[in-house]
Length: 218
Image: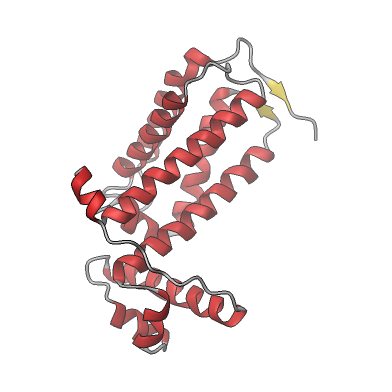
């Protein structure tokens, strides 16, 4: 993606629902779109198909989403939020924290959500032709990197000198590993993911606190 294309991308105009009924309608639309993506692919998806399959008038869909691409971004946002929650839950359940277990648990949490959210694999890991979606993914990676860097330093796993850019690059590498692992395999290439875990761990090891193993009390 060129910087010019990113700058010229139209602003998103999605209406954020506040009432419970409206939120449920949006979730229903997203669930339907997710199912259609898995069944027919991203390219075949249309807003009309989403509306028909949802039993919702097209005009109602446009109250919440500007177009098909806006729906895809909303799906990615929802699934990425679920990934963030899964990472935090899995890290909280660890009894032993090391830099290696941090990387392994984080990447494993993403795989767990990929299994539940098959549409995400199609929309994000195999696509990214949408400039806004591509940019949202980069911003999400930056947030993940900042969160995990802070966590690693706070828990005594990584030195405070761990550069922000290094943490970001580690997340971007993991992101690319997932793209390759799921490019032609709906279940993901487990061997490739494992190689990615080893790669990212080795890259970060320069900033590991010596003997940085911490036993978490139950």
